Length: 532
Image (cartoon, rainbow, N blue to C red; front, side, top):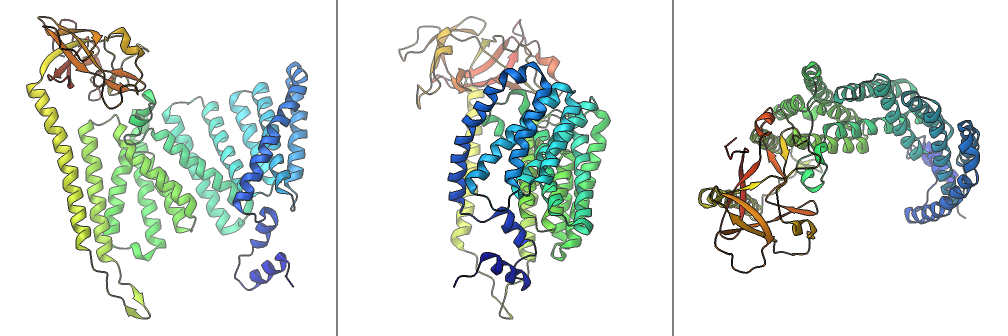
């Protein structure tokens, strides 16, 4: 005879096999295979969307006359959804119908807040609504989501009410939210031990991690794959806050390192001190890194692997974002990243060498022999990387030395504001038919344009090259696909921070071109062809 599941859970909890919260978790969450959950939820959402559309279409005229009508409508929808979701035993389909209703009711009340109040006060109202719903609904994942929503809207309210919506204001607000989380987490683990607070705090800290990554900007080379305009470039903090932010980031990193060393005795080694020093140096350069490393240390030392993993991913994102840091030349940033990578490789080697031998049945197990094939593979890979990089450099150096110098007139860029931090948007005067080309039509072969070069070296590109021999005095240049269109080599000219005025007078792009149409942008010229 099969025993009821509740009795099995109670016996396992009494024996110490399951935690004391297991029965509560099973009661509220239930266990269902994830394919069943996914398919049933999909069906519920598909049924709920037209149902909610009918409700709002029916009430549209009434809602349009008076925004105060939104409150009772949203209360009825939210109340019905909360009543359903509070039931311990509930068919999954009915549960998944209630969730869209809850979101629709909450969205309706949020809209009423923003209609009747300012943005700051409305955001406070949305955050309080999320907390109230989390208290009423005993669903773990939903409480995490509502905790994230409450954090996001509280930060929005503070930034809005303080009228400080620049990067300085967001940095201060998100670090303040992190301090609140640290205090709450300490009190929760020492005194409260509340499931509700724990779930809300989880959503809260995940929002902080995401906010810090967002504040940092685009990470290494992601901007090349995701065209985000000026948003991919990280603007610096103001001079008033920059020094304090760097100090705070470094202090938080050192505190996180000390906390981990205090909790994990295995880290009390020289190589760990070197790792802490490298991270501290990076934290000085990236003022958002210290907070994420603090979250990583606190969560990793307490066994919260999910949050620690998210914080680790955010930390990697931030270190890569140094590539877009405007305060340093590109070569300097590359050297910093290469140096940090080399130091981390050294730290990994020291940690492996310092590791204790494996123990098996009381006897030290022999260390596994290193594979000669593995060493050869690593060496060949390193040589291939170096060779490929140097071949590319040699090709460009050869083109600069032997290519024909020509000048191509710049065309206006929309928007006309060319300066975007440490680079300038470029557009060149190209034949009209170039704008009609599909970037994927040419396949592996690239389109080329042709035109005549005058006595000053200025080329007027007048037509697409059709493969026929060039006329006397003509030259061809290969086009580069860029963001769905085509340009000559690149659509940006990079320069050191603070040199924007120097390049504002640019009217021509200076290229080196070989007889096959390969081109390289090497400089900019002014209206009178003077070197800038």
